Structures are given as structure tokens and as C-alpha cells.
Image 1: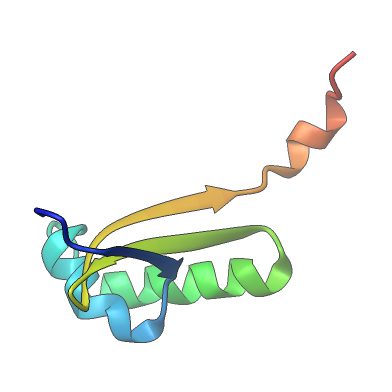
Image 2: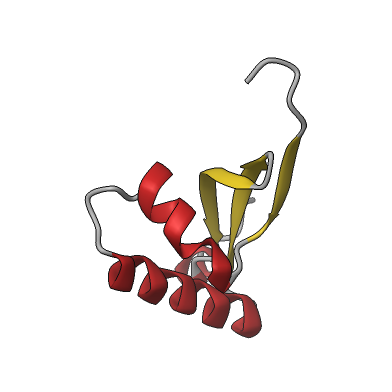
Amino acid sequence: MNNEMITIRPVERKDAADLLENCFSMSTLEGVQERIENTIQMLEEGTGVRFVAEVDGIVVGTVMLKRWKWRNFYPAK
């Protein structure tokens, strides 16, 4: 990755094949598709989001942020 532009964006269903090849190679296409559906549902519920890193139109990385409900029970003092 020499001077390529990296785009960070929320995951989309069309990313499944790239995610399988570059991030979740120990999974299956169906497993990656299920993972995407779960994170899309989390986004709609406001409990989490998965982002992908894209270079030249190819997804090369991913990260997920999740809100843990139990964390609200122990506010900082």
C-alpha cells in the first residue's frame, strides 16, 4: 500500500467476498454473510457498527465497535 487512498466506511452486503478473502479466511461465505447481517442489525438497533477499510475498491480490513449495555451500570466517579 504505497500512497493508495484508504476509504473507511460502514460494511455493506456486497463486501462478503472481499471480507472472506482478506479478513475471515477461516470462515465460509455464508458465515461472513451472516456476520454482516448481524452487524447491520446492530447498526439499526444502535448497539454497534462494523467498518471496512477499502483500497482500490477492495476491502482489505475491518473493525467492529459495539456498545456493551452492562457498562452503563458502573459510571465513572
